[in-house]
Amino acid sequence: MTVLVDISHRFGDFAVDASFESAGRLTALFGPSGSGKTTLINLIAGLIRPDRGRIAVDGRVLVDTDAGLFVPKHRRRIGMVFQDARLFPHMSVAGNLRYGRWFTPAAERYADFDAVVELLGIGHLLDRRPAKLSGGEKQRVAIGRALLASPKLLLMDEPLASLDEARKAEILPYIERLRDETKIPIVYVSHSVAEVARLASDVVVLAQGHVVASGATGAIMQRLDLLPAEERGEGGAVLDTKVLRHDEAFGMSVLGSAAGDIRVPRLAAPVGAPVRIRIRARDVMIATEPPVGLSALNILPGTIVAVRPGMGPTVEIAIDCNGAIVLARITEQSKHTLRLRLGGKVFAVIKTVSFDSATTGAGLPVEADG
Image 1 (spheres, rainbow, N blue to C red):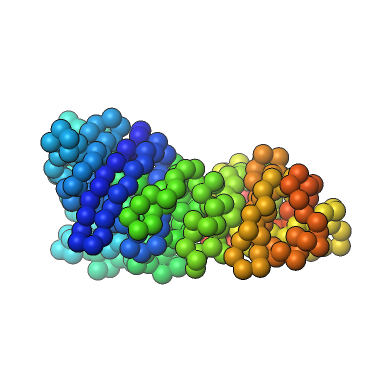
Image 2 (tube, rainbow, N blue to C red; image 1 turned 135 degrees about the vertical axis):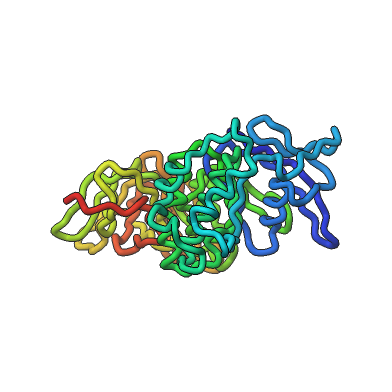
């Protein structure tokens, strides 16, 4: 299902002029505060009428200013989840969930109440009032309410921004499950590299109301110049892997990837489960010979395919490891000392302890399978 946006709109001195098309399961609108992300999502939702442009979802045109077409928000079949859950405090969780169904004609309802409750793991919360829920539980209920409206598109406007790290860790696996198990396209607003790298299939990067880049998540996360200065240390390679086995003796999991086997701290995921990992460029060392006597366990052979200037005394080295690109950020002095050049054969070295909950998406927790 394709989401197409080509719009222009002005608010006083601020203008949004953005164009992109995405067929991804979860498209992230990424950029710093004030870049136009929320304005753009409000335009898609129909909360704002654009000055000019066209918006279409799966071929259904929602806005076409040239044709004088503007589908009102209540007829767009779009579910929306905000930073705060916005649940009705006088209703139980079950009442809040069922509220989402009231605005969808019976013949057009496809979302099943029990299936949504199971998907989000909120069956034990149905009789509670919102005041008795944690922040993460509230957001899961808000997502369920949006899903039970049987939307054609789901918009999520920084749904984790108001949560602490523990609550974010609680809800991220459910958003992954929503992305993977439903056929509803999601447009997800975030300024967090960690969230985007873990969740998004595609990324649209915004700056000052304009689209400065768009594409697959793996490609965008390697463009450190596109990331806000405070987030550049989080950029690097994004690899989709699967669990090959668990090493119980040393508390590790071995992941299979195109780049090679990668050892990470023990994951609560079964053998065969898909796992997306992020290898930060700052966590990658480069060796020109097979390392020996080294504590780092992940050593991936590859070929240098790009050398780009970084910030200050650094350079960014892109290494092709059997078709997967791993990015390393090193000093200009190290590049000179090692005589690194395009086409050079090297080894990307990554410490196992550099992987943590922020860089490893392991899906919903399960019992260790040994």
